[in-house]
Image (cartoon, rainbow, N blue to C red):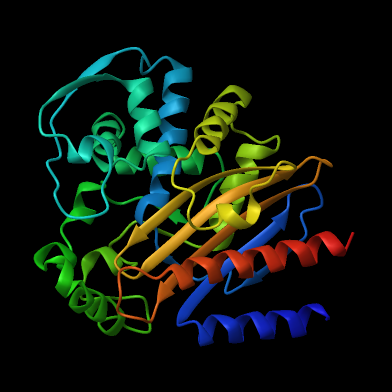
Length: 301
């Protein structure tokens, strides 16, 4: 199947599966890429924790922060499904900055992330991205603001009402009645922008090699591996990634490195058009589409 026919078929599969998908798969050695709506901006959800990790690691390298310094972190005490780590703690904890980096990136712990945002506010994280020449990712607010959506106002049995609002209350220009889903107010980015970030972390760039290595190591230790990982993990590959989930948003960005030396950066950003919290079929479809694009790129060489 030629490339254009393949992309048409994959768009149809996304439509049939109730997903609006924005994807890019890029060969990190040749720069060749395939994508579907690669430049469409979507709210980032927890994907913003990768720029946060980059900015924190860079400030540690500069000597502006000490990774061994401990902070007193208040418990999140969140009872709704989803949040992890300190976000579910009931009591205060004293934790080093290095360990907050691990919790924020590898467990997607929002409370740990906000402790890091207290040290490096969103505007400063965005400024460090610009210093590295990384455009297309907007960092406007902390993670705590993501825990105040309509979903938190319903019990589990009524979660579909929040998802229906998320699906139906948007505008064609990216606006939304739910602020966390409004691309003019939320942290946001495109699939291509996140692939550019991954490329800067995995190949020589203006990011210091030690900083890039630190962020790559954190992504390799990501514990949330239910989305794209099943299609990219094997004895002959390494999959390093970060997920993002909020209401009807399901995202994942990552790099698959093959034992033969090939490496591909992948960004899959989706909006579900089905008002349900649990959609394993959508997760599987995301992985299938991404793997199909990766396989097609591999076959071209």
